[in-house]
Image (cartoon, rainbow, N blue to C red; front, side, top):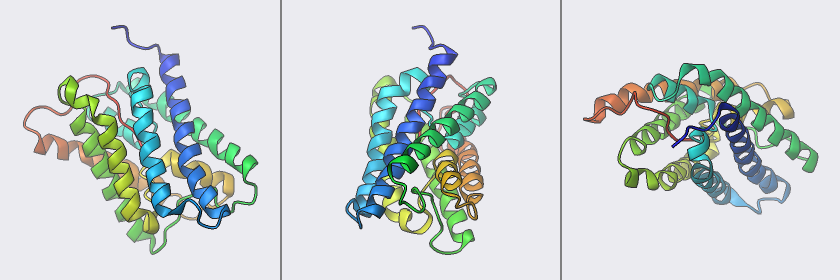
Length: 231
């Protein structure tokens, strides 16, 4: 089977990240402006479901990373060529910013545009985001390493992980696990005080998951081909 061209891969990553941020942070915005009509559970489900759908829709085109931390983690695991990292991250951020710009046009009354903000201390959210992303990246590496039938359920598993992590950690740290998802609304809404947490912690967590995967799995979890994944 022919590999998708670079332009197709980048288009898929840009569109996928746009969909993730538009739907996910859009749920946060609609919950804000409607006085809680979506609810926290609804927001968590939105993030999980949109990721699940995108994995199946875009996985064969680009791997459906839609997350700079995941792209860096896959590169560290030997599953993505280094030459693709900057293009992937660039279009992911472009898609995220386009989504936040669209939400600003649609909901000018929103104060944060769904930006992730710590409910407690910066350290608390930093540790939470590190651990959440480590778990997510470990699951991505694990479910994408097996036979074809194992990969068929990958979208369900990855979407489920994002959903349950958002359910329990969202009220504290925002459960971002994705620098592009946090950076775009923070910049567009000008809430930049804590954005460093959501850039540093997810990247560190994704990278830390690679040696963990190698330690736990008996057969090699890293070093062979492109895979899907996301958040």
